[in-house]
Structures are given as structure tokens and as C-alpha cells.
Image (tube, rainbow, N blue to C red):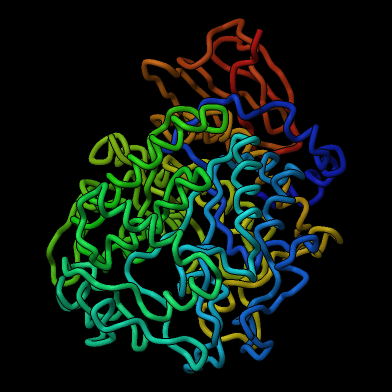
Length: 564
């Protein structure tokens, strides 16, 4: 798609479309929602936005943490209240987002590791010390509750990142977990399933004994912590009630299942993104999904005015290396296959999308539609172009930020926007090592000043993503429908979706002339005499002889029926 003409022409609408009311006027929380068409915004809480009014922001380094981390490897001030502020501001509404994926907000190890890249703290959320508490760097339980409630009020679901595979490493400030809870050896060699599952992911990262059915006592350090905080008796009463009700042994994985599902029970979390899935026995995930679903059903029953519809609890999996072409059979290390969809997951993160975006649009769209209508008819994938730990993202230098938005947000399947994809945030930061570069602070300052990246204004990039995101939000056919090409010149396609409750159809045209009228085929989708609207330019047109004629300064048209 030729997007160079956007640089000047799209700027004309920036001031008009920057208004929250203008951006949300054509869509709302009442639009039909399907997880297969979800637009999921993935952010690292510590790196997204800071709201100074919280205690966490006023005391930026609790637990004795120090400001001595290597570049981009320490806490930098983002917090839960900062996310809530952006929800209230309408940022996610204007982007068409209907789900936010939060990195684990659980209390992290207090100290830092010092391996290779320099001192590193658990700012990312994957080094848990206490699964039952909100990390004070991010906020409080009240902040978490307000975030979820505010998101729900905007029609946005919350996906919580959870870790069943490991806890945080021991440091000079953190006691090690007992050996009946975790192993630190052997380190995984990925030769087969045992050397992928029953092993430490990397050196020094304690692997939870999720295979064990042996009763274990609580870690002494956790007991001491809870007693110091005055909540030991309450936590023990809840654990006793949980094990009595379920009949589970007091084995490590069941403690974690209880602690993770408590986030559903307490706050109304709508789904989980499960980390390091292939490093846990598949049957554990199925068991966990059943418990999470039951907990969610109870929460919805008890909170009828706060729930967002009657959707079941949702789970998506990080199965490292999964590609949509594998369908339901993921090839594990050593050659064995596992169907993770049959073990509790509604979707898998599609690691292949970032490479597939190098294909032309029709090759990409038609192939994905075929896969999702075939082997994955009852499931879905979560596509992405960049993430927090993928060192080979699409467009690492952000030279094609608009094309990336077009490919991601118009592809069949669910879409994951990694924070800053929509603003061309710099993910190639000098002076950093490894994945730290991918985790820079959200570039609000560049958005404020309308800086440029490779000659394209940041606000122009955002406006492009917003228009695509809003259209996707309002039309489930984009991600969940069937794709069919209508024309090569200009490249035009339709998406249609129909079930017992929802019927939706759209036409999209790319590579349009920006100087002369375009005759766009809509035959078989819209009937002669019907009024349709291009949701990119805002124009309306009447269908004549199976076509609509649009003259626009933009090389893209997003066409849907205009309500009468």
C-alpha cells in the first residue's frame, strides 16, 4: 500500500479528530463484541503512563529498591492510575481498543539481579514474590479496582498476564523459595518435552513444580511477610476454605491457581494471557481454565451491573514459536505435538504474523482467512507486529508505521497493539542491551510536540491507527469474518460475518488514487441505491451498478452501510 501521500493530507484532519467526542461519535461500547475480532492493547504498566496522585507515584521506590539499574531495566514510574487516567481521557476509545492486556501487577522481588546486562529489577511483572498483592511501585488494590471498573464502564475488557511457570529469582533482598516448591536445575535444553517442562527456563529462575501433587507448606518468607502486614490469618482462612471446597491437595500449582483466580474474584478480570505456556504440563492449563471460568461465572452473578455481557472467561496463550499455519497442533521441542486449544485456551499468540506482514495484503489476508475458517474455525489467533521480548519485530526502526497499522488492524484474527505501535515509539534505543530496548517509555512527549519519525508526523500515524481501530471496533467482520477479494485495481476486498445474533459486512479498498475519482466494486455486498459511508474520509456515496465512486485525498476507503 502506498502511504506516502498521508504525510501532508492526513494532517488536515488531525486537529478535528483529536477531540475525544469527535473520535468516539461513530462508535461506542454498544457495538457487538467478539474475542475473535478483539483489538487488544498490550502495555507494560511501569512504562505506559504515570499519574502523580497515587501513593505509588509519590514514593517511586518502595521495598528498599534503588535507582541503580542498567538503562531501561529499573522502575520508571508508570502505574495503574496512569492507565486509568488514559481510559478516562478516551485514549483507548479513540483507538478502538476493546481489551487491555496488563503485565502482571503482582508484587515483584524487591532486589535486583545482576546478570550480563547490569542490575535489573522486576519492573516487567514476571518475577513474582507475592501473587496476592499489588506491587507498590504500580499502586494499590484500590487502584487496581478503579482501573477495572473504569475499563468496564468504557466497554473495555481486562486481560491479566499470569505466570504459572516460575517465580522471581532470589536476590540479596529476597529469600529463595523452598525446594519442595521450585527447582533451579536442570536448566531447560529444549530437546524434548521433559527438557522443556521439568526444568528452569534460564539459569537462576526458579521453576515451579507444577507436576507435583505433594502437599507443601507456605514459603516461610511469605508467612513472615503476611504476618508483618497483618493479614496472615485472613489469607490462611481463605486458603483453608479454597482447599476444603475444591478437594485439591496443597500442591504448588493449586496455590497458584487460587492466587491467580483471586484477581477474578476481587476485581472482575475478564481473561488471562498465560505466560510461558509450553513450560507447564498441558493438563494443568485445562484444570486451571475450569477453575478460572467457574470463578468468573460467580463474579458475573454477583456483579450483574458491572459485567460486560455474558461472554465466558477468555484465555490466550504465549506458546513460544506458534504460527497460525500449525493450526491446532503445535510442534513441541523434540517433535511431539500438543493441541493447546484443547487444554483450555481460546486463542494462541501468533508469532508468525510479524514475518507474514512482509507479504502483499491479499496474500496475507486470504491465507489467514482460510486458516481461521478451516482448522481454526472455532478458535482464533492473536496477531502482533512487536512485543516486549521479540527481538525481531516487524519494522524495528519504525519506518513503516502506517503500513504496519493497515496490515495488523485489517488482518483476520484478533489484533494486539503493543503500546507505542500506534505512535511509532522508538524500540531501537541506544545504550540498552537485549529486550530492554523494546520497553522504552511511552512517547507521550513526542505526541504532544507532534515530532516526526522518518519524516512522518507522530500524530498522523496515530490518526491512521485510530481510524482503522474504530472501524475494526464497530465491525466484527474485520477480524472474525470471511475474506474475499473483489478487485485487483484498485485492490478491494469484502469481509462478511453472520451467526444467529450478528450480521456484518464491509468493503475495504487500498491503493486508491488521491487525485482522481475511484470506482470501487461493492457488488454482492451492497445493493444498487444503497447509501454507504467511507469511514476513513467520512464521505457517503450511493451504490450504482455495483460500484461506489469516491474522490478522496486518502489512498484507503473503509466502507460500510450507512444506517437509515
